[in-house]
Length: 282
Image 1 (cartoon, one colour):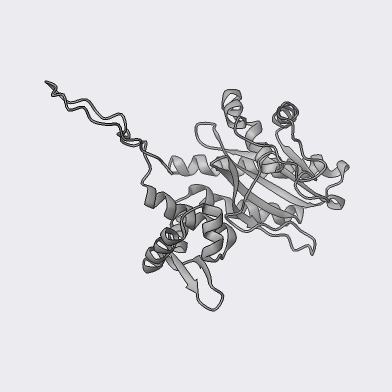
Image 2: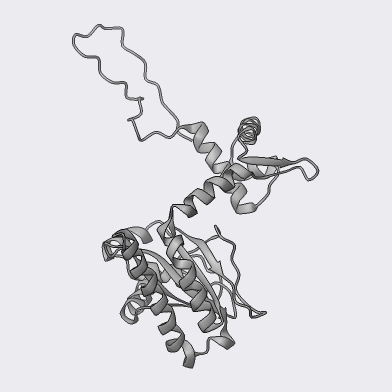
């Protein structure tokens, strides 16, 4: 919430152009508060799948009366729906339509699926595609393994960068100055006993990942699970996403990591090449 502090106006007349009030927000810098609150509600419902008014108020810190007006407005536009029997609000059909428009307009999601399916078939493992969104890792797509024990994430799920193979792959190929700035606000949460919670140790691992061309989540997010990931680049050689395979440690033993990683790197390179071809109209 943005607070505006009003200053008392002087009664003295001034010649020429009046000075701008100190309280006036610069155009483009001040959010539309009602819109910002509505978006926060939508994001929370997307993360939780369904929530009561009380839960929304508690997490977003939006006053109950205001939150109810926001929900009613979103409901009229089909952005949310209300399950009266459960007393829960959830994402509506129009919000889904907006999300589909993002998918339809994304070259990455146009070219990646067939490569991901081939990688899953080759390795027998679950394949993930993820990108960076506001300092969090956002999973865009998954091709699930047919193995009964497998990693599974819903599209739109976010995660910590430092405990994810894909997150590490993206960070490893950032420019050093960009990485330093990116790491400043991050809190390195310990999710397992293997999680790296020291930024200097993390940077050291990222250097190793960059040198070999792939990154490893070594039971850092979930005990008993490993993930191998490689970066995807745009036409300007900027890292924009990562592709990975993940599964239980007994299918990712040390003596198989290099072979599995070679398949992941090959897939990531193919997605990169297809993106470049798409951008030049080939």
